[in-house]
Length: 219
Ligand code: SAH
Image: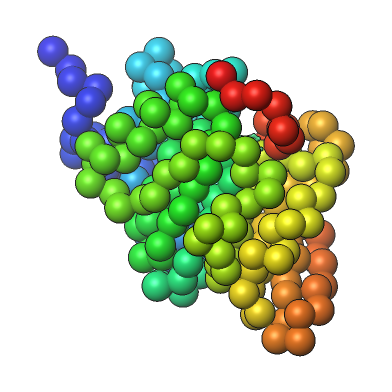
C-alpha cells in the first residue's frame, strides 16, 4: 500500500524534476529553488490531486481557496530577495505551502489566514512537520501590527484595493510583494520602502489569485 502521507525517494525525485522545470521557466534564485526542493508539496494538497503534486499546477484546497502554481510561488518569493534571519509577514496562509518555502529559506515567518477551517488545518500540518511558523487567524487586510515591523511582506491573494496599512508595518529598506489589480489579472507588484520612508513601485507579469477579502466575518 502506498502511503501518501510520507515523504519518499520518489517524491524527492519528483521535486528535483520540478526544480529543473522551474529553472527552465526562468527562476534563478538558488535559495528559492533549494527551498522548493525541500518542501513536500504533496502533503499540502488533497489526496485526490496528490499524483500531480509536483506538476506546475494550482489545486483547490479547503474553504474554496487555492494552492498556487509552484512557478508563481517561486517567482513571487524570488522578488522578496530574502536574507536568512529576516522577519516576513504573509497575508493568506492557505495550505501553508508558501509559508513553508519561506521557512526553509531561514526567515522568521508570520502568516495570517481568514478562514478558520484552513487556519486550523494548516496550523496542525505545520506543527506535524516541525516547521516553526507562527500562524494567526484573522483578517490580514490591515496586516499584523502586533509583530510589526517586518523586513518583507508577501500577499498571496489578489488585491483590488491596495492595503496601504501594510506599508506602515514595513521596516525602512523593506519590501512588499503583492498581486494587485482586477480579478484574474493581478499584476505582481513590488513596493520598496527606502530609508527615508519613500516608496517606489515596480510591476511584473499578471497572475491569477483568489481575492484578498476585507472585513468579512470569518467562517
Ligand atoms: N499562500 C497560500 C495561498 C492560498 S490562497 C498557499 O501557499 O497555499 C490565498 C489565501 O488568502 C486564501 O486561503 C484566503 O482565504 C486568504 N485570504 C484572503 N483574504 C484574506 C485576508 N483579508 N486575511 C487573511 N487571509 C486572507
